Image (cartoon, rainbow, N blue to C red; front, top):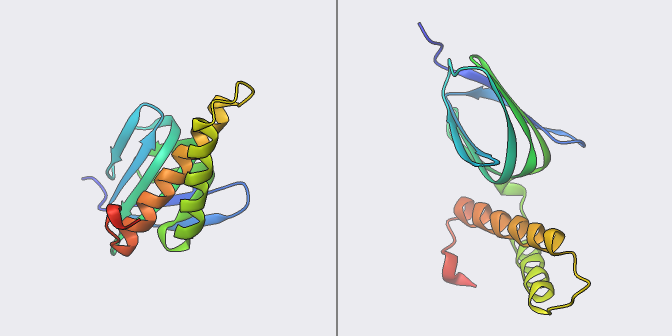
Length: 142
């Protein structure tokens, strides 16, 4: 019989964000989203940039920026380069970062680091998406 929940641990280089039981985890893999339930086959995956959600007693959202995840039948461990709980995201700061990244990309400067600028924009966009979802703010409000 499969377990009803699994342990979820989410850490960054600076702190542990989450250590809790979860009945379901959805995380951004490098090649698309992965849905994980208790009893999942073991795997290691690279994380992309996206929204990580999990269901325990309620649903919780985080923005996740790159890293790795280890999935075992009874545990999911996420080692993220950067991760923020939706409630911690400063929406105004994320909007400002988005504007800066868009301006940098639109400038057409031949010396720009396109990969870095693109990641900055992706990071800002996912932070905005997660924060708005958490706060139930419509996407066209800005």
